[in-house]
Each structure stands twice: as structure tokens, then as C-alpha cells.
Amino acid sequence: YVYLNGGMSHIDTFDPKPDWAEQGPVDIIDTNVNGIRVSGYFPNLARRMDKIAIIRSMHSTQGAHEQGTYYMHTGYEQRGTIKHPGLGAWLCNMSGKTNTTLPGNIRIGGSNNTPGAGAGFLDAKFQPLHLANPGSGLPHIQLHHSVDEIEMRERLALAEMMDLSFHQQYPSKAVRAYKDVYSDAITLMNSKDLVAFDLSKEPGMMHQLYGNSQLGQGALLARRLVEPGVRYVEVNHGGWDTHNDNHDLMPGLTNPVDIALSALIDDLHYRGLLDETLVVVGTEFGRTPELNSNNGRNHHPNAFSCLLAGGGIKGGQFYGATDERGQSVIENSVSVPDFNATIAHALGLPLDKIIYSPTGRPFRVADNGKPVTALF
Image (cartoon, rainbow, N blue to C red; front, top):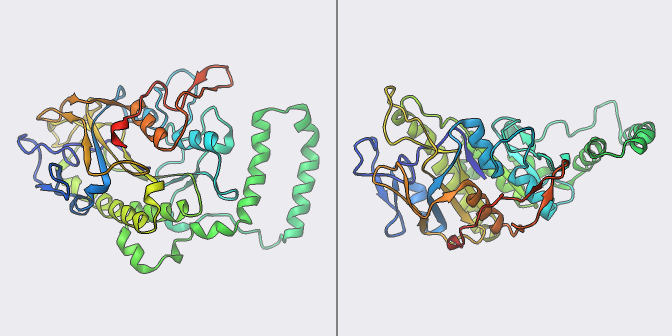
């Protein structure tokens, strides 16, 4: 999941409006699929459009960053004190891990407390592991120089013995989660697959293909992680809050996406992984067709675009449409819960399965969203 934090302008990217006066100083280019045109900021993706589906009819009920990000990640609006699980937590809870030693849910870049990206009311073990910098590897995986493996096992046994009576007296989910942290950490430290976190193992050519941006290196790390079976990886690419100087900012924002996403799609394809790996590009809302007084675009939840590739998605198509300015959806509208339901459907998750929160309230992976089956 490549998350473009801040609200990507749809008319400057994947839903261009060549006849709109405030489209901006960018060419609209053909792709390798007849009838699909995108902005000239994406020459590489244009040559791979046969593997990509564009949803041009997204709309949201949330027009602020925190609420919009939470809604995109969970499929639920923020309400009261309930914390809804993010997609990665839902996936790991409903499908389990395919690698018994690596985390099932990993976030790369961005903030450690991105709204809606956590485990919510599900067990804490489904919380994503956050890596601030993809090139720094996984920190704190080596024993302290003064502690050998025998000493470590003795310390753990002592801690478990001291905690035993407390765990017996308070057999709650929160207490079990505290114990699970130690167990999972030790398992991870001893995993033969830890090498997946080490980008230095990749040849220089691969680093160049993905680009030296944080997004590019994050996407490369994501590919390394899905190979040994990590279920869900999110790569964050911020800076899309273009209230000021929208046109000046677009080249620097779009170039890493064009390079990294093209490399990721090619890499997964040639490794035989694209058919079984869903690639998602999402953002919390779009941007207004009109420029404001600072030559920027304001928040616009009424219409925006997202991308899907791989994972059973039929590439070379766009779904839905907006009006001649990109102001409103006029065909095949897709809500945020519909989008999350489409992702869940691609992953084989049961959309009708009910999971109860600790207060006994029923929830489903995408609320009442309906998957867009025409994309498959």
C-alpha cells in the first residue's frame, strides 16, 4: 500500500482535464492503453498502464487530514472512543501470518501514529512494526555485548516466573499482549529471514531502478519483505498538502512515485509475484480544480483518484469519471468503504464476517462497503 499523505491532486495526476483553464503547466500524455491519458509527470507509469487500474470516481465524507487518513485506513469514520483496526491488522487477524518469524504488518516511513493504521480494538500483536527509514534496517536486533544467549534465556525465564502469578490473576488481552511482545521479539531476533530488512543486500542497479528517494527505497524494501511472506506493507510518501504553489511542487512529488511504482510493478512481475501481490496507491482526498490565492489547491473530498495493480486486478482500465473540471463524480462513484472492500475482496477476506469489539459492538473489515468487482 503506497499511501500519498496529504491529499493527491487528481487533476494534476491521474484524472487530468486538458480543457480546464487551471489544469496547470503540464502535458497530458497517452499511455500504452488506448483511451487512457495521464499527466506528463508519469512517463514511466504511462508505459505500464496495461498493468494498472485507475479509479477516478473516489469520494470521501472526510475533508480534514486526520479524519480522512483514518477513514482511508479503516473504512470507518472516527467516532467516540472506539479505535478501528487498519487494513493490515484486519488482514493479519483474519488470514494469519504466512511467515512465522517476521511481523505480518509493517509500515515504512511517515509517523508511528498514523491515524487508523494501528491494530485498533484487535489484539496488540496485529499492530504494525514501524520503520522510520527504509535504509536503516531493523534496529535493536542484536543482543547487548554483555549478554550471551544462555544469559538471555535465563533472564527471560526469570521474568516469566516473576510474572506468572500476575498473569494468572489478570488473564486479560492487554496482559497477554505484554507477554507476546517479548515472545515475538525473541522469535524475530532469531529469524533467518531478518536479512529481508537489509537493503545493502540489493545490487546497486536495483537501488537505481527504484530511485534514491525515501519512497523508492521504501518500495524496494517492501518488495524484499513480501518475498519471504510479510502479509501487509505500507510505504508512506508525504508532502501532498499543496495549499501553496501546487504547480511548483508537483514535479518533486510525482517523480518519486513514477520511478518507484514503475520499478515495483516491473520487479514483482518479473519475479512472478505480481499476480499474488496487490499494489495499492491511496490518498485521503483530492484537491480543488480551482487554485486559491496562494496558487495552491485546497482539500476536496468530493472527487479523487486511487490506483490498483496486481492481485487479480485487470490492468489497462479506468473506472468511474468526474466532470469536465474534476469537481464532482458523475459515473460509478466509489466510496472509501467500497475501496477498502475491493482491497479485502482481492485478498480473499470475508466481507460479511463480524468481529466484535471489547464493548461487544459488531464490525466488519470494510463496514458496509461493496467491492468493485468490475476491476477484476
